[in-house]
Length: 196
Image (cartoon, rainbow, N blue to C red):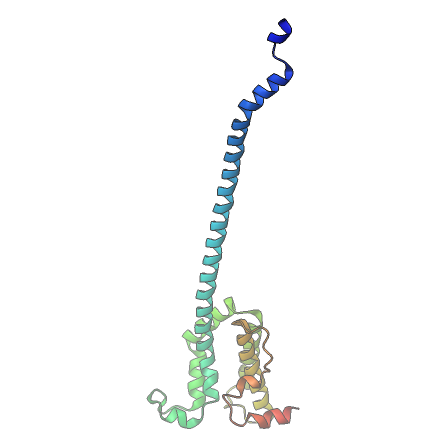
């Protein structure tokens, strides 16, 4: 008779299981909920970081474009016909060379060039440096006069524009440096034909 009153091992296990199962379910549910919340929080943080990085990249791109425009201005003047200067009251009494030199030697232009050197892509900085070295080596002479010097200047300017094009998102461009200038120079075909 005593054997029937004492709980058997199976009864103990069953009783323990009946009590432990809801507790274990609650514990595992709490752990699962906590993990889910942590994953969701991490996803939100990552999404916020991506959004911030995208916004900063857009702001940087806008700033780069502004700097590129300011840097390109004197070089665009090189390719402007002299008649274009006569019509502008800001340029009265000045030669094209004087206008270009005053722009390139100005403090604001130097500051812009400094900004370019800080955040532009390496290829852009190298192309700009090569172009500037070309102009520095010209000394006090007017716009390059020999056909060879003009071709060199156009090639360097085209390289610079091409580097800028690639840095603003057109990395896979198939254009070459002279194609970058076709919209600007009416007789560029004679330089392309002579360069082959």
